[in-house]
Length: 28
Image (cartoon, rainbow, N blue to C red; front, side, top):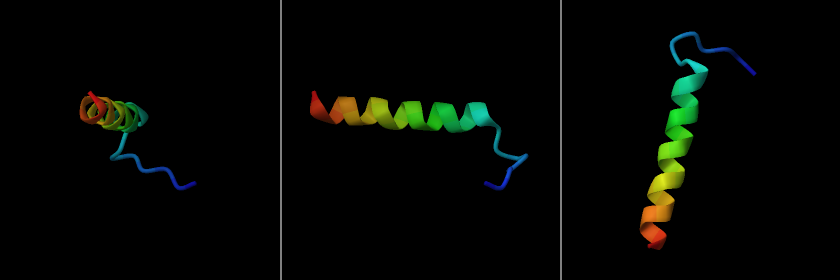
């Protein structure tokens, strides 16, 4: 996997978390 210095790991985690939250919002 190539490392992207301009994209920190925390940003990816936040993005995935927001995606999961949006999915839950759609289910509700």
